Structure formats: structure tokens, C-alpha cells
Image (cartoon, rainbow, N blue to C red):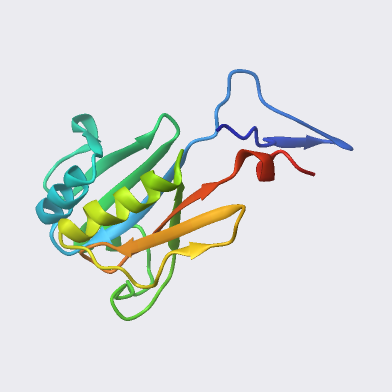
Length: 154
């Protein structure tokens, strides 16, 4: 599923820049970069070697979504604020969509098998099914499936 987002407002209507795709780069601090890469590799993710070194890696989620896993020292160079301990505090919830309910359950199963944990039971809202996991650093990843008919309604 692809959602076209407005890039800039030109009065009462929104228009998208020519050949401009919005991309998202989520930056997450990790205690051990190698362990985090192993964990997410077991979940089926790949990494861009062009943006990988001993302090950071670029995990590819889709053509337009990337997760930058950064060592604490590297992450600290981007913010003057204290880095929160995701095992004790929540600063962000990363939510990814799936094509089926089965994919939701499979991703959580793979995460737990790779050393992650679940933080709640699956949520079935009829039109939407969700479950999630906490990764090795405690970051919460929600995985959802939404019935296509629910998305198309106004």
C-alpha cells in the first residue's frame, strides 16, 4: 500500500513536488550494533553497506523507509539531550504494516526467537489486527494488518 502525502501547500490544495518521494529515516540508539544487526537479519531485514560502519548501519524496511541503528556514542552526536533507556522509557513506537494477519504473527514469532520480547497480547479490532515486540534495546515495534476495505472508507 502506498499513501501519497502532500509535500507543500499551494493555497487551498496540496500538490506533490515533481519526482519527489518522501522518505523516512528513523534513528534508534543501540547498545551493541552487531547484536542488533544479527537480530534484525533474523527478522528478514537487509542493510545498506554504503551506510554501515562500526558506529551505524542503515536497515532497509522498504524503498522509502529506513532505520538508522546507531551506537550510543554516534547517536549522541545528533542530540544535546540525554538518550532515554528504551527498556525503562518509551520515546517512540515504530509501527510497520503487513500484508496479512499471518505476517503480523510471523514477525513477532521471529523477533521472540531472535531474543526480543512481547509487551502485550495481540489486539484484534476487527478491521485491524496488531501485535508487536520489543527489540534487544527495548524499542517497541508494532506490526499491523488493516483490512483493505477499512482503508478505502472515508
